[in-house]
Image (cartoon, rainbow, N blue to C red):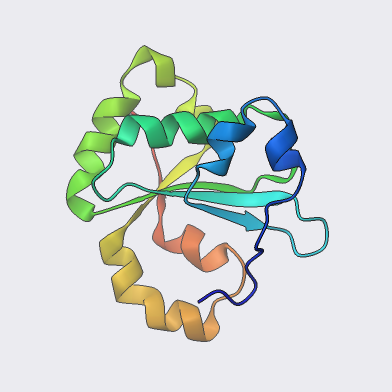
Length: 135
């Protein structure tokens, strides 16, 4: 499971404004060469959705966001309505602009073997997730 994982995050994740929040994101996908953050995954199994969205915003609106290709909220299928409810809050009005994606557990379970066998990069995860809008 830990293949390709770093034991310590790159310096910029500890030195920039909002870094403490960014370090709390569940999964940070880094570019192999530059170690820049390419994608972030917040897993919201039973924790508050609000705090996960705030961490994503800190990352997306911070200085580390230049190479960002994907922001994903990963949660049980049944929590999508809760996620959308949080997005109606005025504080989260920029979420649609940031193209945050919802990745339900059901899609991961259904496609995980194919992703592990044939997937490369973010493309398979983008294919099974969908953009979040407050609607």
